[in-house]
Image 1: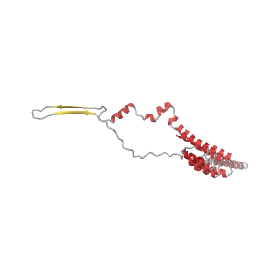
Image 2: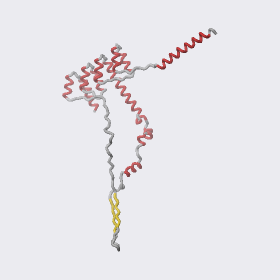
Image 3: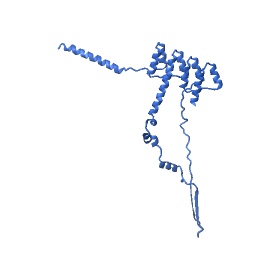
Image 4: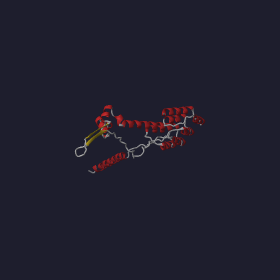
Length: 256
């Protein structure tokens, strides 16, 4: 009996330690950080290799701001151009995937033809031919036939000097229903992403970005370039290469 007590105590301690370890694992699961611009700057300042940072960008959830102003800021804070190019590529790929997911979840694209036409509430709300005619008739007060007709009957004077007569008038009139203007106010304006213009390209060049990175930025951004002869001459004076100018021209042609 005296040997069973220490053995029992050892078993209890072992079970307690195991249960505590499992509880800690369940309570505090590992959760990866969402990478943003500041995360990339911190990794660069900490001395991580370029390849390591690019691998993190490709395998992590990201939320980068790749506007022209923020790209110039990243360049000035010591972030390498290959890393910035990877940030641009990752952001554009993520936005494309989100758009595809939105379309896939939409009722218009998620159903086959038969299920869509038979089950969609859009087609169920369409009035039938009978209902459409009824609504059309309700908009008219005296019928739908045009023209007018009248008849008058009269009698001569009677023995007491009185007269009598009757008159029937029939016709049609069409009423035009005018709806008052809506009081809900103007429709909300859609917010658009800022467009890349000539000044944005010059800022990227002045920040030291390579030709390839600038062209990639032009191809992946909404653009509003001034391609007049005067503006093109000014761009050439500010060391804008012909390849970049051609990319600007192509982007404007595709945006029309």
